[in-house]
Length: 423
Image (spheres, rainbow, N blue to C red):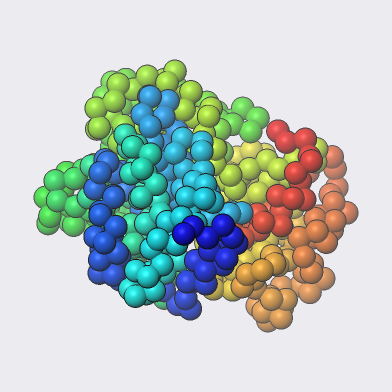
């Protein structure tokens, strides 16, 4: 019997979130075997990285749809509901599907000790199977080698930008972290590496050679010829194999241009005829929130999930490229993160910075911020009071406000601007 009370089932799967991280593949492999290996029924493109993997996945899935391919997209984390993690085209997986499957799988989940993320991974793979997708684009959750998504045998793998994050789990230097990301590389499966430091290139290329996987360093395959900002989008021209592709990219920042080149390289290698009009159609229909997302036009309010030093650096660079060097930053960080490097970056920002906390999760508390040197006068109790303070601090009508620091802001932030004039 299907439990009609979806709340109880969602409470059950959220309750599977455990302290720490249980990175280990054998139980997931056993779980997927019991479910009939649904992930083996369609071609998978697997994406790992510290920053940019979600945006790369979203762009790739949207463009595959524009080419007429029924495409599943699995991403994490979600902003509001876990359904966001699993979609086919623009349609999110339904509550009814989640309830029905979790009820049917509950004995296996309990017996094997399956975690929240592993349940969502299995739900995505089963949903894509039932939806008969032509392709599934699957983003890793954490790392790569032991990530639950690494049960797949992909037709192509992509590693985006690699930097320090989750050091307590993945390693305290770039070589170690790159090694964990490189764990998604499979024999005979092409691996595309986005722009990265030399040490990351070395680790990924060596792993590719070791297991006989064709290796492509994307910046050598795709050249960025020109980038021009046009309001809240950017005109991008790239070239590969003598062909020029020019599109309007709805995601801002040089890093998003680099993510787009990852998409072009993989599409080309998979045999797609790169048609700018088809690619543009995909980008125009892409749904991807929380990446320099405009929540309101007047005054301009932006939201970015930047939550590690590299992500924050890229965001601040993008604001400067847009000429918004005096933007007021409202930052709310997760207590599980090492926030000192991000505080150091914000100390150098030319505009005002207000700190606050999000609700319902492990937000950094005021006492911690003060201990780390933040001026108590610049700490607001919640997002609403932080926004009110930001409005008071604005020196002119053109000064924008940018919320940053975590995916967890969205649950409180989106309702604040749901009736706003969005650009």
